[in-house]
Length: 219
Image (tube, rainbow, N blue to C red; front, side, top):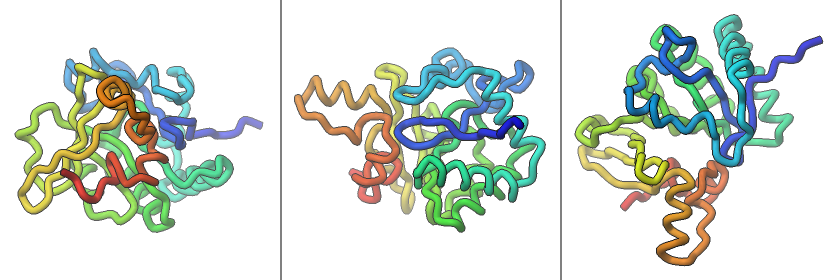
């Protein structure tokens, strides 16, 4: 009997992989820019296992064909089996506009269960729904710092080093947090000679060190 698998290793935790690309091409990146699609690194997910299109499509189909309660229960079971307390959305792909309500229902259910969640999305409506959740760190991906207007977490691609700048708007003030991704780690090594593992693409290390998305005291 075929077993449903939704999560795969990513960034030292468990992640959800959806098909990359525009909806008309079979992807889920409805809000992606041309530059984002061209330079997308989701097909080579760092230290995680490379997931082929077929598995991404199976995961997306499971999400389409099941209720939010069943999806949340499946994610909880897989996290428990992997002995993992942290879950990252959109290791590849994104949330299309027609799935916002279902996505938020799953995210909210996992938040109630105490699951630590993180993830990057270009879907502003989904991001706004998630801003007040306790355990979820969902970042809105932007390519222009001027778009960081509302309070919340933002991610801005740093295409030069293949990583992400983490930004926080709080009380109408913009803070620069820690970067996310291996590019920051290797640049740091070159500049300082110090090995700080939290600068890698490592959600577990960032959570433990309160860096990256989990930085509560940005500079």
